[in-house]
Length: 203
Length: 349
Image (tube, rainbow over all chains, first blue to last red; front, top):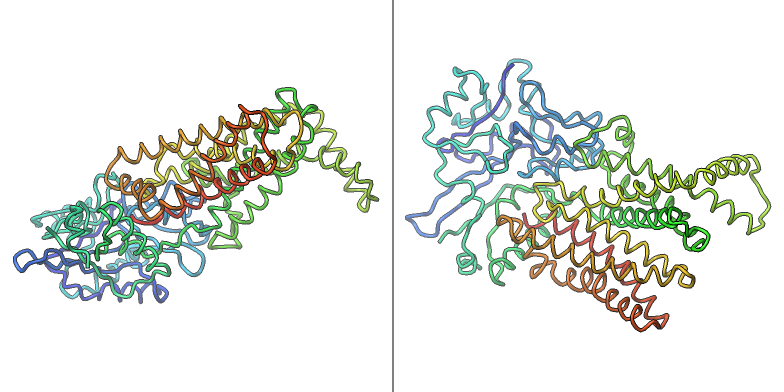
């Protein structure tokens, strides 16, 4: 069985949001909600250290997803392909999974269920790429099988100078990889910022 | 020194402003009083922070109260004090089913999908505290109703109202006789279900690893103690005179002290963990939640009733007004504990 995952090459990402738009259109995401978005983060306060980086906000399809065990009806589940999906028929909208996701990647759909990125499982089943990957004009987004050394995903990870996942200390083992990031994720999140700095920058 | 600013196009959050300001206050609490113009990644990510609102907080309170009443009533039966404490036991037994019913209605109101909650009862998921809770609630509703039927019939007999539904009455009498015959068994079951329900209301929050303010093993015992204390306070309010009163007052003193100790352990646990739990503890103790936490949760809910109770135990005379105020404060503090923790856990990530 394949073990699907995704990566973003941050050297290539230009923050154009084409992926977010393609995702919203493909999955008919209601207005004001997102399954995938790109956040812009500026770090540094002088020309030498100033950097712009992008946060890719979508479900990481963790290998040990905290959202799955808390679901009281079994609506959130992991497929044999390693996709973390929601069975909308038996989701009762209790939002235990939204509360449990340490990354905040799920949202309550106005229809009364919880929704999230499915890695476009319907497209994968038809042998196509997820909509965001297909729409990416710089080929920053890479999709593939983590168990297949010849897959574009494995090759991109192997070629990257730096590979990161979000909050590895939680042991969730995300299958979404950040490649060649210039700013570490904790830094981009503003974590570990000294209190003094926070005070000085208060505007 | 690093400045971090983050923007996301057109956020879809309904309560984003409130969340961002709460987080800024958390940062201020941690960073020494100045709210920095820094948006953290957490705020950007958690676009929908209106997850669990007042319905869940109120449900946790009512569930804890019902659990406490069930434990007190069952204990009185098992300790052989049912006859002696009858007025208090009867009130406690009669209150549990409506409280559980109201809790279930609140849970249902909180669900996104109002037509499909039956899925909770066609699945049993051992890893999901919510699944455990759903089943425990159903079981408690059943067994507490069984235990309440004899009390209900006794009340009806005294009221001497003409019976409009003789057939239902006969069925109830039949079930009531059975329940009275198996009173001790029912009390044992209710005692443990009550403990389970009381613990579960805290464990539901305590198992959420992603929420630092919730992720503590102390929440289960704390909510159980708080539910018990609320139940005893409610019984002292409704049935203040009788042989049970001195026992309940002493129990209340012990429960308030236990709650304070558990709350201290909870905060110590957070403060000795990583950066995120430390920030959560700081937000409660000296941040955005501090006024509500110190005045309502600690002051009104624990310290003041503890002081009044101690006075009552030692001086042996307590003006009725003071006792009523103390019990009301204890109940309000129990509700405040749930409200503050439910909201604090979802902000400032």
